[in-house]
Length: 564
Image (cartoon, rainbow, N blue to C red; front, side, top):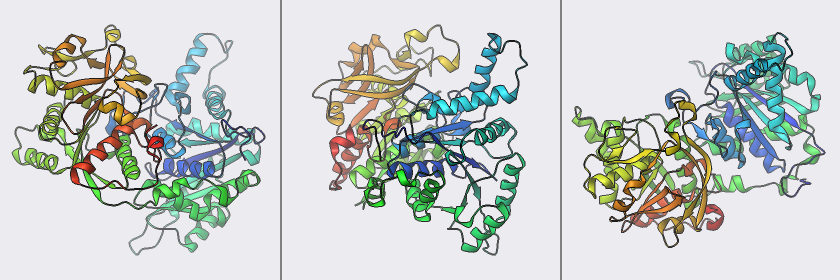
């Protein structure tokens, strides 16, 4: 099928668009449904990309509290975006850019700037056509050069902030050929007390869509179990779609099983048929089967890894959790993530709570301290790092975790009792972590970060080189502070080694004599994929398995490919 050996893009197809909307409630899993559809189309030989529309007024997700929208995901070009872009990168194994995220703030800002510059020649600037035209332009530009573009419209149909996007979608449907446009609507199908699958929420959701001129081509019901045949028939009848266009997306133990589930339902074949892609698709027996092999691979044994953070919300550390899962797939083990609340670990007024989390920490086989901002919970993170260092527990520190490892060594090895990051304590006498020099004069919180992909040079003969298998790596960053150069000579007197650098910036640290003590100023979790696990996470699991006497599984994975 692919006619371009480099990109896989078939220019004879033209762009095909799949729009995905959601009804009834947010958090249904329309992003995973969309990403799974994309994965199956990619398996069939098509070049697929994705766009996430976020109707909020923020220009990007950079200043959002994780409790609002989960983690802030960072793209290779430094774009700070919604975590759904992370799902698209993981499922499609494609790097996205900031252009693949459309927000109301970004769109309105651009249109207003054009108005101020006189680009509209004195016309009255309105939602229609100026905002809707800009939305459509962004989607088409992001889709350029690919076979299929999947566009997820965030929020729920009926939300006031989402109306301009649905209007743009309505216009889009009229501007594209019928065979190039497909609208998928994901809704909730709950159970009644007597165990009956109820279709009324779906009916009302579709009615809302149709009231603004949109008719779904495909309906996906999110339910605990698969939709009954009678449920599908009822949805089809009242929502005016063929019964064959109604699909189940039931609950599964792991989101990576969703592509297999919707494939069994035949969603991919139906989508390809509606978009006239079937003649161009690879024959079934020639399609990429690596995803199924990976997800269904047998695992031998399990390990417990403590995740020490302050946000008691799984989505706040989604990429870290997924990277641990990917490493488990690579090593053939299940990874149980044990939550350790760093704030509670430092609660001086609640001995029972503090001791509970310290006991959790002491029960795990490995420890990860992830990134974050602000002083809350940092003392608990430092205590966890000290425990890992002194007890030879495999440890991985990410961004803030890297910085707190520097603080821990400064305090407990160098003897600087007051050592800290200037972010946490501006008055510390030993600011071993300090602001980036180029950020001194910047006051805009939305623009004070080192963001995106940057290269790190790795010292030969170090643990870092062993982990990456090379003397250079490119990973994504998101931080304002770094190791203070004034203390380089002091740390040289300890077992702390900065084994990765970018000029005068310290990027990777390790502790000599420890089985696995690694910290990265960057976020390797953002580049981890199910079939290409992040090297620092794989290294952590290998150290855990060696410590626990768990043999490495011969799972057929090419270690060099996994670590590339």
